[in-house]
Image (cartoon, rainbow, N blue to C red):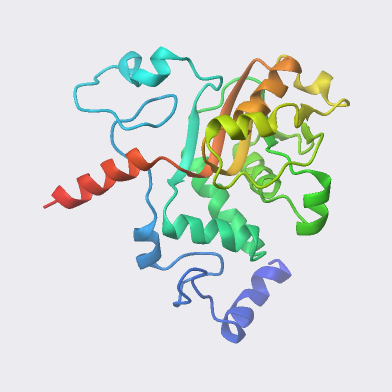
Length: 256
């Protein structure tokens, strides 16, 4: 028996596991209580196979599972896998990891991401959305890289933690619209000059904690394409998609 496993009951006795959101008792460290689990908005129902926008009834075949915006303008990515929709509980988890330094949440959050992924057949690499070195020095870690490391372990795919780099610092993107975000990010993300041979011809699973407008992931995809990557699929813990949240609320309200 490993020492960590032997010590777990003692640690749990001295420091009883608590839900990171509400502080209530839980079965093990790093987990949520049932009430907080229920508060997470997990994407469900019929949705676009590319962007997760909710679709109406009557979309029977896989070929039809594409929303009108994606048909009008094909996205740069090959699909999005989001563990949750961005709401108050998922926001609290993201902030607890990002600013509260609750790194113990990473395994649970990464498992939720991995459960949403389709089978990754072929040559896939896992690459996190990068932080600029100044922000990395201030924070001490890149939360997207921590999630990517665990997702790579769960999927058995190779992690290239520095596949992308921030070539210039950017201001906080909060409150900016997609067009402004894209302008701020133009030229700010590039493939690592020493990773070109690894990236060329491969598929990439791009991992982030939160996907908001898609401007950051678009900038990453443009950089990966320059490196010769074949296709990019996005994996994130929380996706900002209000229309999907509205559709989920409607399904809950009509549930008998």
